[in-house]
Figure 1 (tube, rainbow, N blue to C red):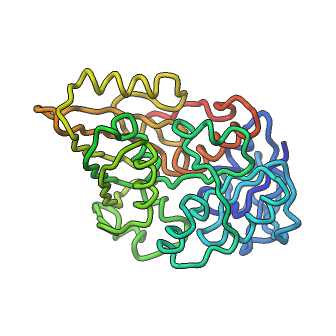
Figure 2: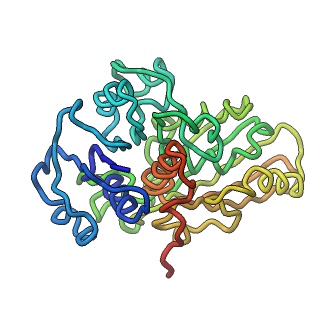
Amino acid sequence: MDIAIIGASGYAGGDLMRLIALHPHAELVCATSRKLEGTPVKKDQPHLNGFIDLDYTNPGVDAVDADVVFLAVPHTVAMQYAGSLHSRGIKTVDLSADYRLPQPIYEEVYGVTHTAFFDAPYGIPELHRKEIIGTSFVANPGCFPTGATLAAAPVADLAKTIIYDSKTGVSGAGDTVSETTHYPNVADNINPYKWTAHRHLPEMQLEISRLGSRASVHFTPHLVPVTRGILTTAHIITERPVTAEEIRVRYKHLYQNEPFIRLQAPKLGNVRGTNFCDIAFEVEEGGRRIVAVSAIDNLMKGAAGQAVQNMNIICGLKETEGLLFPSAAP
């Protein structure tokens, strides 16, 4: 399959190129970048030297032609490409937020008018595989909603309140230098931000409602001094008392056949560079609070890895193709 990556020079784009370079059924034929047009990929991303022998290009929207296109451009930019790709039936995975939310919610959250809206399945395969199969366009979820939703999904219908507390690596902010990501401001610190109004919260709320829950959902992220990874603690306040065995059965039932979900102690080092999501839980004495913790790599299961997983599904390939490898340890 010929693959095009629109917006290939960012962190997610770089991980997409790394994965496609090693994928047995995919070949990268187009890597675009407005600011680096004409620059060899290997000069911008030296770790891909010997794997990607392309220069960045900047084709017009209608000139992009491939079997599969990944949109790794910023929010509000993806819609400029999506309409053309969708109308031509080109299989597309959009890593931006432009198709994750219903149009009115999207416009309220992102403060723009959506100029090319259509419905697209929300690409957490473990929860929406049936909707993804057979489609030509997938809205790849945000990194925070992926880890949070997978942590709470097996018990969402039991919840009356869910509070997500997430710790994220600096790469989640992208490759643009800012005061927030400046090394002296990150090192030896834990910095909460967007305490009550992060733009990923509506995704989390929508997903919990899709799981049949009427729970209120709350979220606070924190920036921690690591490069990759998100560790999310979900405090799930239940409608009724539950037992540890009841909850164990629920997690096992939902995830026992999922190749990228591991029910084990979540540590960022164990998922770094991989598409795995590690999850564990405890039930508080009295059975009124479940604490579920998940660990993902924000650039992999939170972005590029999940995008390739979705590509495999919509292309009729084995879901684990090009993705089933462990992290490097230590």
